[in-house]
Length: 187
Image 1 (cartoon, rainbow, N blue to C red):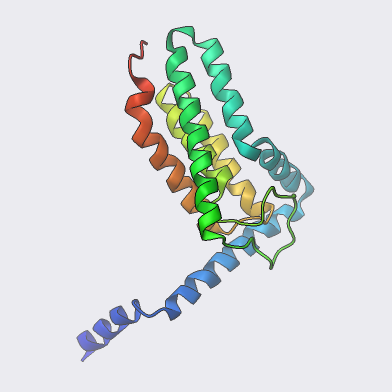
Image 2: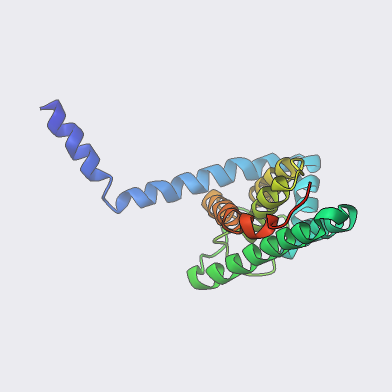
């Protein structure tokens, strides 16, 4: 009989009501991380990261700096920067299709360029940069990208699922373009 109950529990996973549970979890995680911004130092750092990541600006600047500093692999750095920009553009397109509203149950700590939250374009460009620039030997980008992703929750403008989807989209974009990015790469 217990086996039958276990099967019924598995069938419950197909129930659309469980999506409400995931939505509730999204809200609760966001609320908890948003509360960390009550510390002015945390809020200030999160706001600074959010501003720096607007439209992928931090990552585009880092890629161009890499291209200027690493002349033998300039082309690879420029292609990595193009992949990062491309990932950002794709995330904006997905955002226009999905049109998920930004969280309303927490007060945002920054202004946003748009009304829609899924996926997080900050997370998309940050993760694309971490993967692409990491492939070129810049592993320090990954922790900064992770901080950028978390900042979007602390400032209250994305749900965790927005950030996770953005990070997955950024990683996928960079991985798909890695061969193109490193073609003819020396060093």
